[in-house]
View 1 (cartoon, one colour):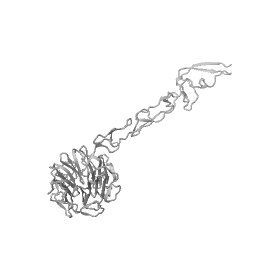
View 2: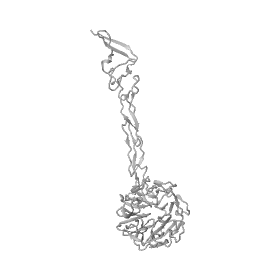
View 3: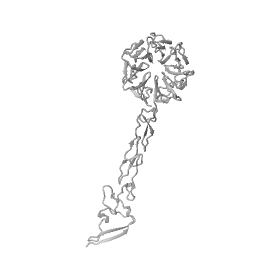
View 4: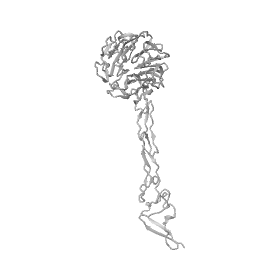
Length: 521
């Protein structure tokens, strides 16, 4: 007959063995420490207890979770952190906001956390991944920067301001006017301030330095601007008060401040008021006044000031025998004016007959452009001149070595010559050795030199006839430089193309562009 004997003893820390599980090993049962253990043995024939204890019969002993192999299992949310059977399980780590869990926890492994990578975030604990920050599209700006625990927030630009790049830090006033020099560009904004970019070796960007800029940079201390104009290495602005301020190269007195010292910030042109229009050449500057007369200053060795002499002037000088002027324009070394009767007078350098009088004689005073009437607009290049007529056609004359006359040849023209097949022109622009026309359709066609892609047709091939610019429409203003061109669209965004060795395209790079590229405000 089998007898049962109950044996009771006090154990400081008994070991209870249970059936192993796949998830863990044996563990000491810390809950049994210091308790009275009751072991019931079923005696066999020899009256000896079996080799195992009461728990060997199966089951989970005192009712704890499934064991880890050497004792009780870690309960949900805890894990065996040190493989020491004498210590309790510890809670899984919590991944805070701004981090995410890279692994899933288990009774034998903790949760592992990692910080969100740059440009991403998490807002909850124990997130399994981080979300990328929202991108603020053009037309908006970043109003709240993103962080590890918060998304980037975007706000639409207010009326009268814009952004043209993703994640713009701020919106800026829209561009309402352009001026391009040899290697720099400037834009007048809706708030009356000016931003310039490109080559700055003479301070022509007006930011108080001579550091080149690849993106638009504010002109220091300038406001109330209603017109911006650029020469080769100097820039001028007309203000609401009819005054003029200039900056940059001043070797020949082209800044008009009575000195020949360069200025990297705007300098007031002395003794000049009532100005309604500006025109800048290589090293001379002209202003049309409200009374229809013109004042010019700067270099004059070729008669480009029109004052009847070849003496340079550091202050505004009256253009001789000229009145009733409704428009002025300047080339490198010659100047022209359109009168109220829609005829044209020109003066200055004339080696290519760019003055339009049929000769090659320099003119220190204005002379009539022969056989030209019904003129609605002027555009002067380096050594050639173009006129837009009231019927929307164009006449050009002067140097034509690159095809800048646009008549399909490279033959110099001593008299105004019609451009075949070109009509509907509402604006003209010419600088250096290329010319562009803005059409009633909003499109733009250019011709002449194209070594740097300044014609915007996707090539570097010179064009002897007008050629459409690739992907450009809705244009309201042109701003050509010597080897690059810019255009302002109906939305007041600005695109530039051509040479970019000094950042004059304003896209933040030094890469030349064969097609229009947005200015990076």
